[in-house]
Structure formats: structure tokens, C-alpha cells
Length: 143
Image (cartoon, rainbow, N blue to C red):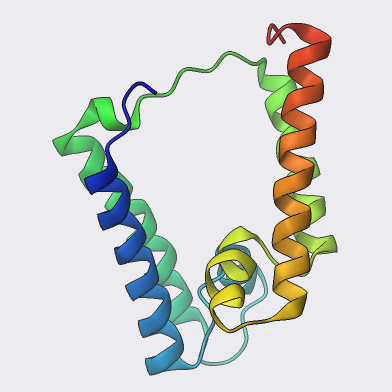
């Protein structure tokens, strides 16, 4: 397993857990990225500020990480732009169908022992694994 860095993985996971816990504890909100972002598209009164700050923080953190360690955020696009766009649309459809994304269900929902989140997370993971396997088998990974 090349590039496995357990210390940074544990630190990153702990920071995600801490941020999600703080969001729930201090604001009573779930830190599900799709829900936070969709609330920006159709904001309710009093919601725009924290949602904007949340998304801006995600973008800023990525920018800072790239500035200090550009190799850590290396992108190796091996798929066509069209295929990537279709995949993004399918993921977006799945997020709407599942009433949330992996951060909302997988990080926040599972820690609250939500059965719905357990089913959603298992479905996300199984579908992702099956899709990756089928694409790999059918194309040899050369799409």
C-alpha cells in the first residue's frame, strides 16, 4: 500500500469528527456537505451566513493545504471530462434520492445511531464498490 500515512489519516478523521460534533453541539445542525451547499442555493432566513462560512472554510482549507503541500492534493485525471460530468450528475441524483451525502449520513448520522443513515451509508459504499468494479472489469480502467 503506497502512500499510506496513518498519522495524517487519524488526524484528519479526528478533525472531521471534531468539526461535525461542534456543528451539532453549538448550532444544532448536521455537517452534511450536500445539505449545507443546497441551503446556499435556496437559503432560509438567518441561514446564509453560517452556510457561506462553512463552504468558504472548506475551500480555504483546501487552498491552504495546496499552498503548503501541493503534492498532497495531486490530481491524476484518467477519465474523460464527459464521463466525469455524468458521474457527478449520477452522484448528485443519489444524494437527492438518499436524502443526504456521505458526510451527513456516514459521519454525522452513524454517530447518532441513525438506522436510516446506516442503510444509506451501506448503500453508498456497496454501490460505489460495485460501480468501480464493473467499470474496471469492462474497460480495464481505460475510460
